[in-house]
Image (cartoon, rainbow, N blue to C red; front, top):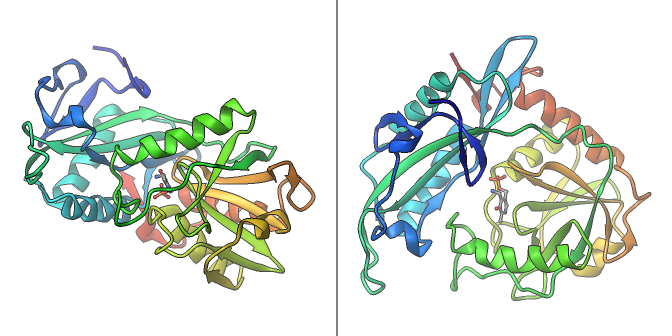
Length: 312
Ligand code: PMP
């Protein structure tokens, strides 16, 4: 069977399902199963194609799988698979699909049967899907954003630290609202009124040569890309990095703002609430981070080999 249309676009012809690679149309879920209640958790992982080396590198595979297992624990899910098995499954699926382009690798874990709301503990199914998705790191312009009137979910309500589909209902409220108002992106405040994250990415602010980002206790998803960017800023660019609370109005006078995430990669923000950020284009630090990130994800820069898993 050739590639098949899915929610994400053209899915590969095969899916990894509970330990086996199966044709796309055989990976089905019964209507009564736990998936329908949005209790499922997932990871969005990217693999980047290096044309010169003719190699595909999965980026930060272990860091993503480690976060998946933290989500599994907090959700009181039981998995039949070890991290090593999911790593091997992800690689085997990429090999089977023979991609020669940038792709997503998307593991999802969901409760096996109809779980009661007062006893949400139990065994799970796991599937991994892949589909092509090109990098937008060469996009020349910045994105426009507004601070959302929708507050980010908080840790003792619906923990943003867990990458659970239910959390994206909160993201969608902010995202849809900002899009209808004519902006590209939303920036969400937490219950303390401090800057938190975008609906699907973390935020970095450059002020007076310092990279500042909300701490991991600010109701953000503990982003793999955020951690990567902080390390690049410190080690490669030699910049001071501070994790602290950010006030909304600090954003307006910042020299640079960017969003970062597996999907967002490093996205420059050119205006927030109609305030121009810096010169309104792509700031110098953001540009350096984008370049360094691009070279590392594709293995052009061979430092941090532990970040890249080569698909043989
Ligand atoms: N925050 C949210 C709400 C997200 O959905 C994402 C995308 N996964 C991120 C941050 C960025 O996380 P990561 O860098 O691990 O993809």
